[in-house]
Image 1 (cartoon, rainbow, N blue to C red):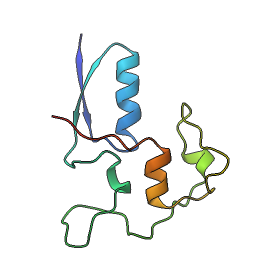
Image 2 (tube, rainbow, N blue to C red):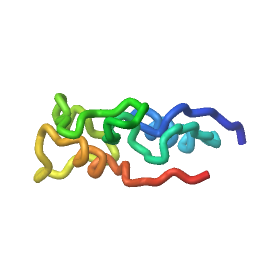
Image 3 (cartoon, rainbow, N blue to C red):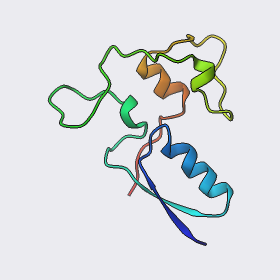
Length: 97
């Protein structure tokens, strides 16, 4: 099986992992954070890493931001807070070595 490098486990990296697996590749993911979700993870101000602000709400609708395999539930707000986006986007995964 051929290996493919994927940089980051955020909104672009996660679907890249999925498609690598679908097409028979072994994805090797390089994520510098201990959390999945990329920039949508809030980090306190004393962190040197990039972060959304604690109050960030997405500016694209849930339909335009969703993954086709995981459509948002009707009761979810159309423009979500970053914590809710992480939850409904299945970013509740944790990093393993």
